[in-house]
Length: 308
Image (cartoon, rainbow, N blue to C red; front, side, top):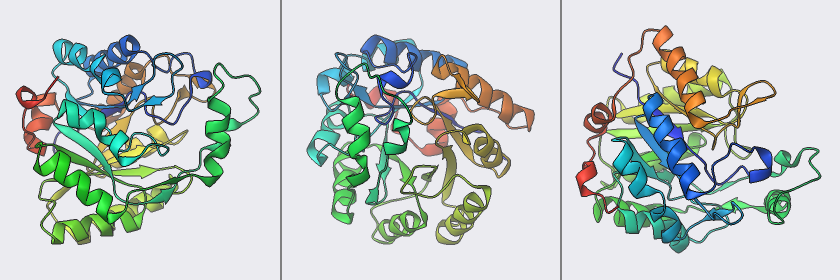
């Protein structure tokens, strides 16, 4: 099997500051944790921005630029910026940071879907900020929108015009068929990097049999023209990462996807999760890819062509 790419999703837009004191929300904290994750073995850093005042998801270019230069100076890791942002943002807002920064990679959700976060409310009654509880509670009526027109817009603006390659986030079987549709239209070219996103309420559950069928379907649609990575949100994070690695895939971890390192034990950094998954994949005989090896595998444009 080829070398394995570890991606780290550093902060995301799903978890809120009250859930963990270790979730990075300021520019300094995001940069520090991203740099630490890269030092631990993450070749790709998947990044969202936060409003440093209260930790809510941000689309402001200034909030991105407050941490991107520091990351570039301190590490050669591939920067992968979200085009999903947050489900409560417009497309224009979601693309503001990526269009300004012109990163080597962007994420791209391959369909519209329910994005239910309200189970995260749990039994919590105290919140650090007044936006957190309504944000989660009202997600029982939340739809993440990415229509075929939206997808084509991102492919054009970030891919064809700015040279980014994509982490195609597929939350369900239909998303693979949507990706294949864009391949057939000539708007997506190999090598294709698919992220199987599992465990989000509204998408496919994080179960081994589902992963097997996702891979079987991708094999039939894309043949040898794709690579896959596995992301399991929540408690199945490491178990599905191990399984994906044994199947020849790549892996993604990070506090965007799971706040814990063990049952009932909060991860104190993104690097802690990267270190754990690195030990897992090396124990089964996989060798971790460096950032430059990941660039070659994914045919990225190079860090000299970004704008931060």
